[in-house]
Amino acid sequence: MADALRKGAELVSGGLEPDGVAYEKGYFFRPTVLGRADHSMRVMHEETFGPVAPIMKFKTMDDAISLANDTEFGLAAYIFTNDLKTALRAAEELEAGGIGVNVNNVVDLQAPFGVWKQSGLGRELGHYGL
Image (cartoon, rainbow, N blue to C red; front, side, top):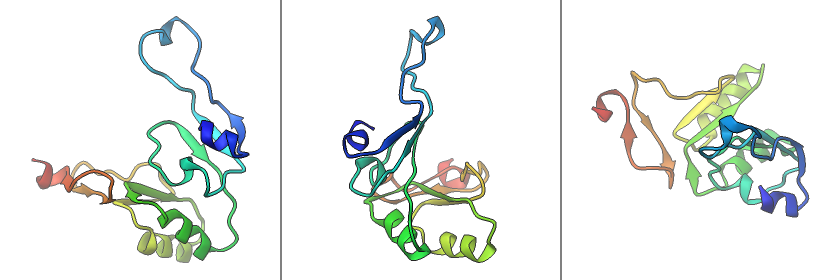
């Protein structure tokens, strides 16, 4: 997040640890939205295991898919759209272990889940996880 802010991202929301006694023990971070992100920022091409959502404009679907795939990681990808053609294209072309279309979770406990590229090892859940 610090890298993105240094490179011109805008802190739209969050970005801090929550206050209060309930948060004194442990590690907590408020959900954060970064505007004006670009692909030079680490948050756009590394796995960020935290509640950080960088927002970046794109011109075409080709650009969006190319930018999303331009990483050595591939845990999960998400698309929110009301266009079925766009959803199917994203599901086919995004390089990730799970593709969420209009959902925020790609794991089904009854089915195996696997990743692409440098995100984890092999498959888990389903009979593979047993």
